[in-house]
Image (cartoon, rainbow, N blue to C red; front, side):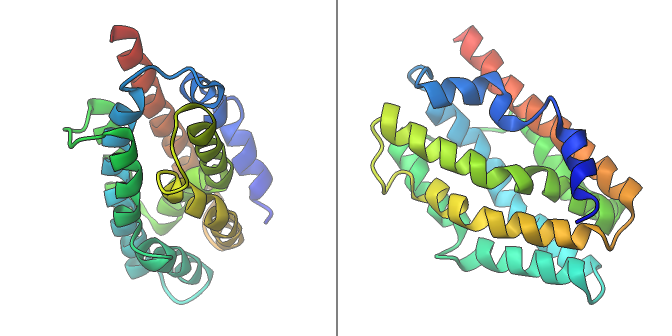
Length: 210
């Protein structure tokens, strides 16, 4: 995992759990409607993710990258069920409805959509930037939802599953990272880092305007 320290350096100062939106989530300070609005936007990303993983698999030759992303995709599609379906339990619990993607959400989804066309290494970096943080984020979200927002275990299932799975996903991605171009991978990390931060900035801005 020789690239792991470089990835961590790239994320320094923009670790997602340090963002004001997630800090308010953890503290029970989100106002009525914020969780529903967040879920309505997050679902656009969740629908794109398996497509991105499948594109990386299709573009990769035999080896560490294909194996890592294939295993990640298998979980996404069926552990314990398709995660786009599992997300519905959270959407229902917070009263989320369908909504058009905001510009920040659209930019995040577009990054995931187009990353495999640039290079496998870049796409792996895009995925890695979130995956290595995802287990901790999911665990924090689930704990906050139960402690402050009245959700039961059914409503937090999506996040509980990811808290359990994402440590493995992060390890697979970091193992694969050493088999691709470091410069391209770190460019993908930086692009993903900034797109996710902008996505959360958008949630903060929406709350300020509400």
